[in-house]
Length: 146
Image (tube, one colour):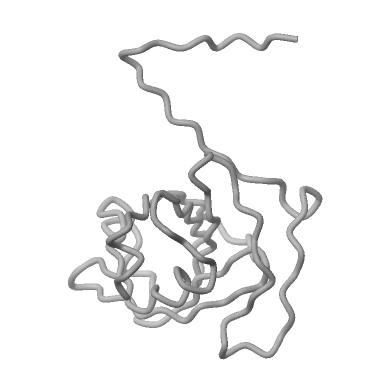
């Protein structure tokens, strides 16, 4: 995935069961406040496999249109999280984090408008992404144990 540029803004979006039936998705208001003037009306959402999904960005309302294909092509069911990376260019990288908190094993699929073959995702081509949510009221142990 293309990662040159000056900005590396990241934000996440939790996908609900209701979201997967929709063809639009609201973007982070903080992200839109900072960068919506840099995004064109049409750009690509890029998955590490080479999957490129053309999306339409409504700058008046911070909404992406055209996300239903992503949800369907990757078999999302709700409960997953999308981790977005923006490097100051026109396109946005996305990683799919499963309900177990780690990046999913991507199916070998490309968007129907593409003519390339999907790439296999491995640790050597960017490492895996993961997320861990901690409830500060419960407390947690931050020691590494051998």
